[in-house]
Length: 481
View: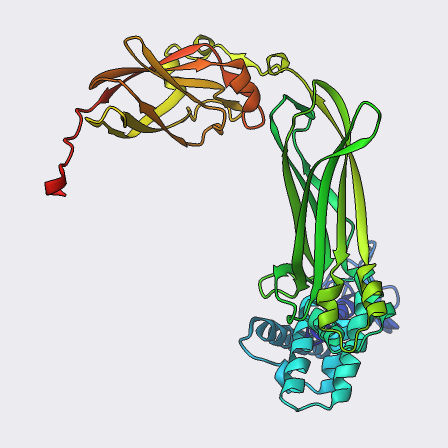
């Protein structure tokens, strides 16, 4: 409360300072504007007897006088210092440098728990809970705090103090809330869900491509964590499914995921007010080529048996009511399955942007090993990226080939993010010690797979020089191991 009192006092001092300079004058005696000399008793003087100013000019005289501003300025300074001190105390209280809440009366803490913003109300709530646990307050203080928490949680237009979530869930665990009260808390604690991620923006894919769908929602002052039935909280059952319509229009489930057991609890590191939670589901598209209508179903329901385990004297009818608590959301989706060769990923001719195409790709060998055992082969570990001077949307969409004689082994570069190193390794069977040619070759299908990270790719073939395979290391015999 001291913060808002300090703001009010500082504002009052500012208004007082403003009033000092805009308040009306007192009296009607004429004065010289230049030196404030009183002209009372003089009959139309032309010059000021005191300073000699020309009094015939317009606005050369004024009527009345302003009171002495020094007392008002002194009051203004005093109010500003007092308000600043209160704001400083609030700052020290919030940072833990000085616990002002420990010296406040219980009635003031109860008022702050209801009136103030989420952070200050949470601190007041924590202080009340600490005093209750230490036996410094009567049990009636807990009932008052519970009523405050229920009222504030129902006020969805306000941020909810996360510390008061403990008050509500602990009351549920003690069996102090009716089903109607629990239902109201349930309806208010889950905010509307939204489809956060649904694959690519153009919703165009090829058969066998994986797509990630993410549904997120907010809870009022609670974070989803894993906890046992004995923990005080709100246990949830989350399910998410994706369906596509067949030729007859019937929705066929393509994938489904379920997460049972996360509990809405206060978390020490969470942001007060709301907490973002999400459920994600990745599927591999096996639908035929063409447009497909689909739907994402997302449901959040209360786990009755877990909540009932902490609800004193809960019978089957009460548990059935708890099990009926749920929030269901549906999101329509539309995808277009096409042949990878029909996906137009712009391929840039390296010769059009650089005289030396090899300078467009950064390629480094981090390790190269060889073995006498031909079944193991030679292993080259390398990293690759597009040159930093290229635009950020230009990536690699093709293969990196390692060739020696009539042998050639390629590595698909569909996971490269432009300007970021990507680590790979390749095993070369039958290769001899010595130089191995390395070159990049564009591939339309690989570019289609990489189009989300790289909207444009380097086309053609780019020679990256050679890599030298070392001589095989000697194999250790059994006696030397």
